[in-house]
Image (cartoon, rainbow, N blue to C red; front, side, top):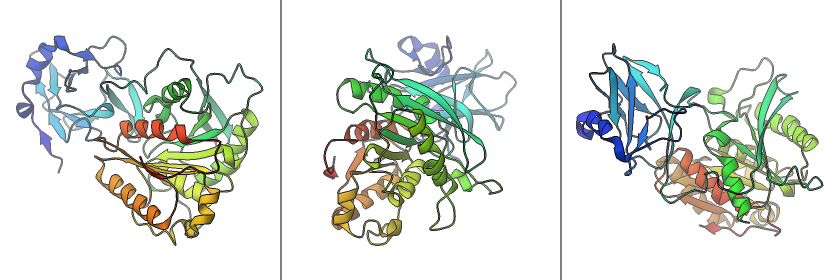
Amino acid sequence: MTRLVTAAILGSALCTAQSADNTQPASSNVRGAPYPRIHPDLRVTLRYRAPEARKVLLHPGGPGLAPADIEMTKGDDGFWWVTTPPAVPGFHYYWFLVDGAIVSDPASETYFGWGRQTSGVEVPEPGSDYYSPRDVPRGDLRSRWYLSRTTGQWRRAVVYTPPDYDRSVRARYPVLYLQHGAGEDERGWSTQGRANFILDNLIAEGKARPMIVVMDCGYANRPGEQPASGGRAGGTPGQPSAFEDVVLNDLIPMIDATYRTLPDRENRALAGLSMGAGQALQIGLRRLDRFSHIGAFSGGLRSFDAKTSYNGVFADAAAFNKKARLIWFGAGTAEEAQHKGALALHKSLEEAGIKHVYYASEGTAHEWQTWRRSLKEFAPLLFRNTTTIQGGSR
């Protein structure tokens, strides 16, 4: 049964809201909406008008906003109010339960997460602007539709091109294929994850090479095939999933034909978060003839054997290290299962002599701040002019 955090424990949300002169509207609010509001200590005050409702709960979409549902307090004006405990910085999904019905917050922008359009609140990370727009040269986000031969359907990819792409018309660029998690789609990395701002800032600082980033929809099934549970990379064991075939046979050829890419494995990377991390490992490790850099953010095998996992690709450490330019694993320290799995994988690869990079995002859970930080750490290691990336803990 879902636990509840009562308004009484948190203090009077109504009083807090009425004395909100030291708070600021969240940047994720719709234009002009005064709530949700962010407190200096990162508590969040929200309100919802439902004068006829009998009970309203705030349901957080992850532990970073609140550990459980919170009962809201009704005011005389028909608004229901709540103030959360101090939130983990970053982006958090949420919605209201109004007499049991799931309701989005009309004061919030909507985002595709949890398999539907839902509300989200941006809680700023003090002292950090690596994922915010700065006064630096800006890249572009382009929406690219293409017909997949694998699925027989039109698909959409979101493509980031670096700031000098349209000016340096003879230049060609390496490509990072970057995948979202379950319940999200190809818009997640640019909208919730702010990947374009992260790349713009890293490129402006000279920390990352200018690159194209391709963010595709991670769900695919062949005509007449039932979708895999949760949209995960499925398929018969040992056989490519429909999504793998989309990536290899539809997406990469389309990108190489449409954009000025460097169309070889040395200049091609594959990474993702959660479900997308599993896809990156499944596809990338199977096809090292197509990818040289692989990143897994908050995802991967919980049970791992260096001799047998992923069809034994790690069994010959010397051969693997010669071919793979970068293998990168990361997780937040507050996402227990994923952090434990990433740490165990790191130790197993160290013992097996596999060069890799392991990263821990301090204090963040299975939410976007972990993945924003992961991209910030991962992108500068891509496409270096060296034969290998030296591994170890970061």
